[in-house]
Image 1 (cartoon, rainbow, N blue to C red):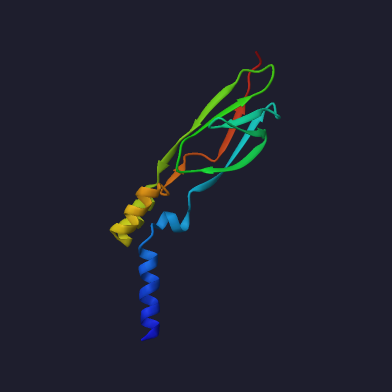
Image 2: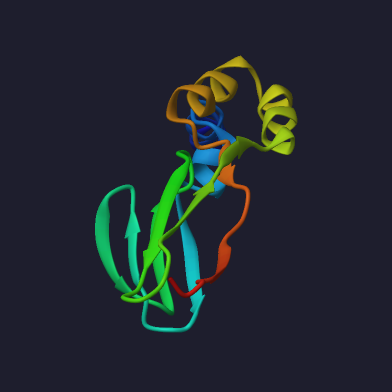
Length: 123
C-alpha cells in the first residue's frame, strides 16, 4: 500500500511539470569566437568579456550579440530561440498540464545555434 502511494505521488509530481522544464531547463551554453580574437562581446547590452568567450544564457529568449574591436567594424548577430517540436509531442503524450507548464515557462524553446563565429572587417 505504501509503495502504491509513493508511486502515485512520484508520477503526479512528474506529470505536473513540463518535460522540457525537467529535462532541459532554461539556460544554455553559448560560445562566441572572433577573427581577430580579443574582441569585446556584449549580449543583450551586457558586457561579458573578450573572445573567445563561452557563457550561459537563457535559451528561451533571442540573444542579441555585439562584437567590437578597435579598428574594426562592429558586428551584431541575432541568435534566435525557437520551440522544439519534440518537446510539444512529449508534453502532449504526458498530458495537458506539462504542455501548459512548458508553454508558460518557455523551456521548450532552445537557441537555434550555440556557437557563433564572427569575422570582423577592418575600418
